[in-house]
Image (tube, rainbow, N blue to C red):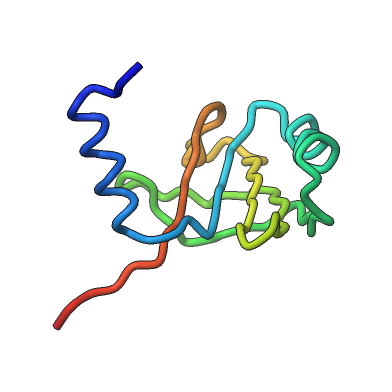
Length: 109
């Protein structure tokens, strides 16, 4: 099956940005996701931190001090990050299928 032209063009634009070096997830079940990445995917060991707090921050213009937990590791050359928001000030870290991929970026003068 071939991809529609728009999807194919989008994939090629992303490939020109360079290799992905970070994958970040906000799973619905943090502990299950951590078990999946270590047990099934063979990633780790993870550095796990709870109660990380950011103060004097804003989300959509409103004050939103946020507290979260995170787990970090490398899976080959890719950094894996799992994030869990631990407070409800507003929910600036969306749970569920949220996913972020980071790629190197260069600018021309």
